[in-house]
Image (cartoon, rainbow, N blue to C red; front, side):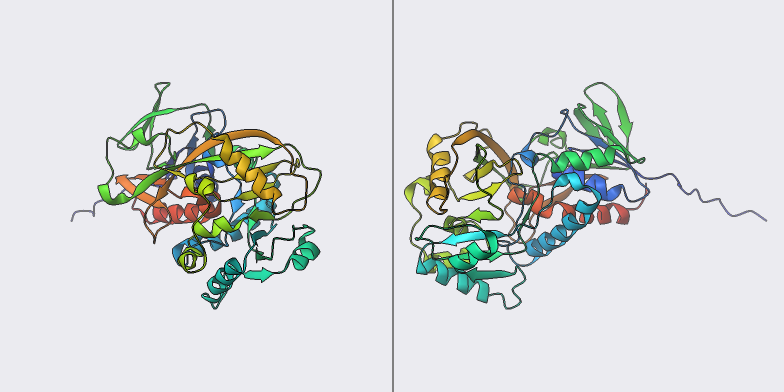
Length: 389
């Protein structure tokens, strides 16, 4: 009588490598750290300095496209609120936003868009200048006739949020954060660094944004994967003497956010030449030190653009001054950034298995902060559903 063959069961914790510690990599690491996995997070610099720290820090619900994009945004916003109680350093604030409207046509557009969603899942409302002043202590100039209020819009401090998450991860027993460690190659889930050391993992997550695409180039990407690159220009002012609690947007933002876009041609005339030339909308938010971050321009498929045209940052400051009854401080600094974005109108980001156990996560576009935690949960589900090798 022969004995049945013994089945070997791998009981060791799964080993996960995450390359890139921007907001996507950091949130994936944080969600995985709550499981029995062993996580190694690689960051080529001493601290992240890409798109994750060069943005507004917006958790932006108001303009999100219906369907997957809005679902993920609402999910992620809920998690931001929960995690902020664990990690106060991310400076999460439910500050809301105001999109300022200066014409009846813009008001008509806003009302038609809001009425197109009977559930009003974005919690939008058109409010009067008096209501703005009463609720937000923001005084508007007389040309502003109304504002689209979104109570769900929130912010984090872009310079501190990712660092706070990484500092929390560094205290977690099953997480190793390897800063100043550039990954040279990935081959069959073996991660090799420029220092010459190498280690095999069960899963490798590549979350390097616009940098490090060469890591997956040996595997290639499908031609129809639909990834593009957008560059932007932003600025910050000196500290203001007034408080600006909500995030401010101008009516040009209606042209760029997908929830409002279907109604633009019916209600709005062509955009003014200067912002049109730069693909610009005004966004403005105040940091805790009183400075105001201003933007936002869109230079599509220009990943190497590094020059900032002064006319566009001057436009942002002047436009904010034309809407608020306040003395806008002078500009202190300007900078550029870039991000990958998906061209798929259904899925708002790309999670593509480039090889067995190697997942490329990218192309959340300007929605990285907004969608990050929900993306992290979907990546975690993908890893948990994957059979152990």
